[in-house]
Length: 185
Image (cartoon, rainbow, N blue to C red; front, side, top):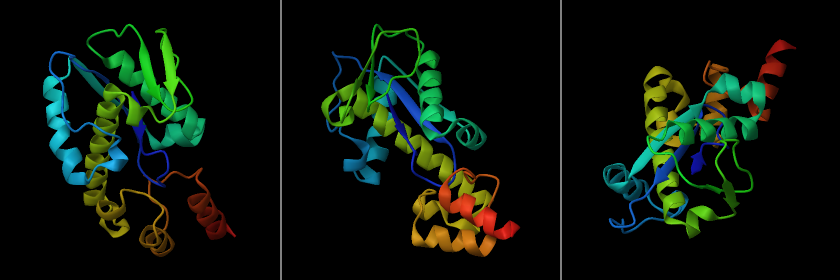
């Protein structure tokens, strides 16, 4: 299991859970951050086709603002694991923390570089979130989500200052919160 989208100022955080088929390995799996967008987009359908089970889930912007990003990420991860059509015997999670699933779990730092199933989950979480940000770009084109996927780039921060905060921005994140605060004073 892995997540994508903890750092952006907009959009949900996504999580994916994958159970790979040991008899049908997938070449090229790696941490999604180390792959190009083209490589991720090529691998994602192969993962969905060859995995024994996979699921993608989200925690929405209001949940991120209400819970905090860590707890929202764990919620998305929990949802992904529970959505699998096969119950795993163990959950391997990239990072330091495991969601509460009722299934034995192990957190593995840099797991997306060490465990093939976590690499696959990393790719699915990232490609799913990127696709969702492209949809949000259609609704909010002046923010440039297609280019920066909601991350706090100079372009995104300039668009925020010019157009204000949208419904898909994380109001609890400092740059957005500060902009809201200054607009109130």
